[in-house]
Image (cartoon, rainbow, N blue to C red; front, side, top):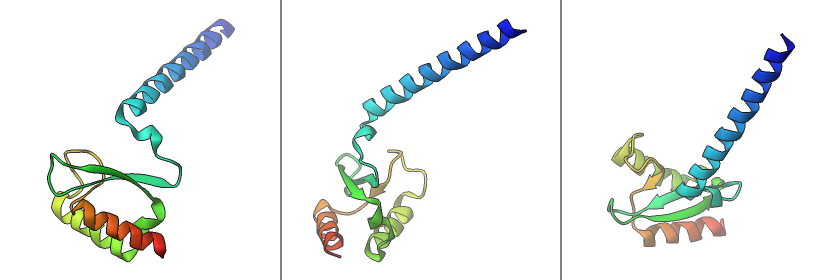
Amino acid sequence: MGIQLIGLSNAKQKLQRSLSTKIASFLAMSGTNNVPKGHVAVYVGETYQRKTRFVIPISYLNHPLFQDLLNLAEEEFGFDHPMGCLTIPCTEDYFTALASILNGS
């Protein structure tokens, strides 16, 4: 019986190492490993082909001006967006102007 438990423990460790390696490679491929703690990546743009990735502080999500953009995104994309990420449907100029306002507040 002790031998079976040792074999089960080894199998569990191998599975955990395998999964962590696969997760790490997925994160490296998707580019999400370069988002610092306390931030979130969003994509901004009006056309599907041209989106720019921005990394913003999570605190922006609670600001009323940013909430308006989130509501606009919900109306346009719902919760099942083909890119699979948070996408804001506005111009880059508008978004950068909003981000500079939020930085000042």
